Image (cartoon, rainbow, N blue to C red; front, top):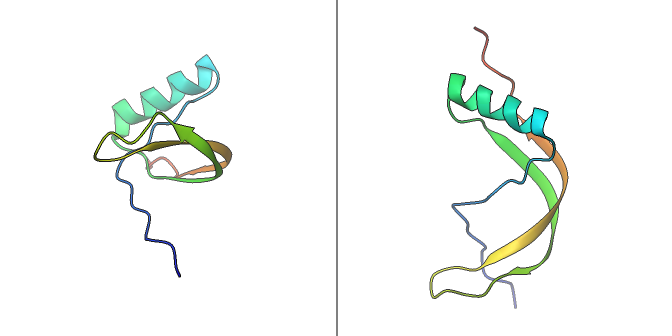
Length: 71
C-alpha cells in the first residue's frame, strides 16, 4: 500500500539572526518573491488537524535561495 500524495501550498521560514532576516527582507522588498528550495526533515506535528490541514515541524538542513536578479 502506497502513502497518499502530500500537498502543501504554504510554509513559514524561521530565519536565524537579525542581519540575515533584514537582508532577506530588503531583497524581497526590492525584487519581490524569492525562489527557495528547502532540504530538511519533518520531525513532528505542530498543532493539530484543523479540518483543512495540519502543520508539521521541519528541521532545516539546507536552504538554496535563487540568485538575486542583476540590477
